[in-house]
Image (cartoon, rainbow, N blue to C red):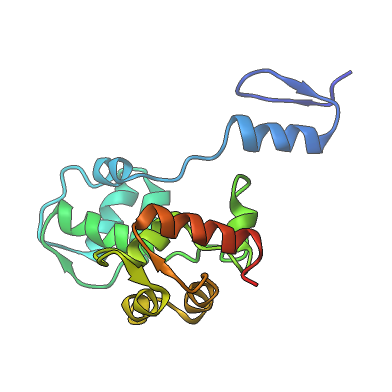
Length: 179
């Protein structure tokens, strides 16, 4: 007999951990969106102070939005777009995990000898081919960090005729671990 039942879909679970996993994966809690923000502030007269925004949201029954608005800078907001920009700024400053790679491809991204293809292409954007390792190094020097410069220094010392040839050599360097 099931001990835990989902109030949303009716699924039943024998253990609390199965129920919790179901809730996290099947019915995740939705974060407030910009549309939720706009709806909770509908009808407010602008310009409005942060405190007026908070009070208006609470009056509309949007306590979660009001809690978020309390974290906005204490100033006067010209219009809904001004509030939305500040709201987006809060979300941009949230702490992001730096040590948790994604499931697919994350281990490679966290590996000390990795460099994404996009980053590689940006480092050599605009370089004229054919190019030697010395020219590649000089081109990337202002943009690349120390780790990237180490990888570039591991490229075989020769002239590269185009980006495809350089990418192949770089792939070989990555496979050998940069040695």
